[in-house]
Length: 374
Ligand code: PLP
Image (cartoon, protein in one colour):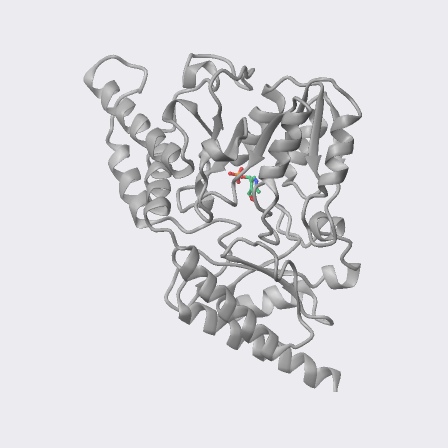
């Protein structure tokens, strides 16, 4: 990012960390195929295994539970399709990579609603699970990518256990932003994505407990213990490991909370009627999702971009267009308010000056629209 720009869209992708860049450049010269027995192959193998241990350490798992994939989307698909269950229960606020995969998985799908606060409705989950005793997988994200609201995973695991269901969590947004202790969490599978942590795009992992049977999505060579065939993306994997290591060593939640709170205090000063989704709830330290009544997301995103600040609309879909946010809709947020939702997401590269620049840019838009309205 240039010095004059403030990138506040880490939930979309986090800029490459210097540690990841260095590891990737070194890995480009690793030379061999990690499946080869010669020295060059073994060098490549050691890069992959170092990264596997680093990724496992980030979530408190052991290295042999980690299967590298092409990203969070593929990890979610491997979990949902590979588990071979007859029923899938997902929350209404899952990422499209879970919702669409569930629909395509060939299992019966139940969507468990969230409360108006954006938290999974556990009573409804309990009822859905009790209704049918067929083999079931519950997939609930660790924290939502639009609002940052943390989901009650411990209770989800408890309920799932009572009903003999498996649990998968999409921890793509939670990992590196909130501490994760795999043994305490008690899930069966967890998805991770490199680029949300400061690695390159196109690499991720599924962490799965020992003994779980998973049918691969991609068959071929015996890589990744036959869970994911194909010659490993050594460079991407090396960067993922280094980014995971940096995220673990430098826990930034406290620093980001101060910056996020400063942003939200400034926002409310500028627009006392601003609505901050999930304020007061357990949220990721880096995420602020808000709407200012009367201002559309499109207007805000473009105006901020012209002033050097990159944020996204709370409802931006992968095509870049502003659509209707299924997350805010599931929370029952009124359509016109949801149409103004903006997501500001901070990360390792965010400094105080970025927050001040964002607030200054917001002030300009808010004052301009107030003059127009007058
Ligand atoms: N899950 C969540 C919660 C996400 O936010 C994203 C990316 O936006 C993904 C999954 C998909 O990850 P990837 O981009 O690595 O495929």
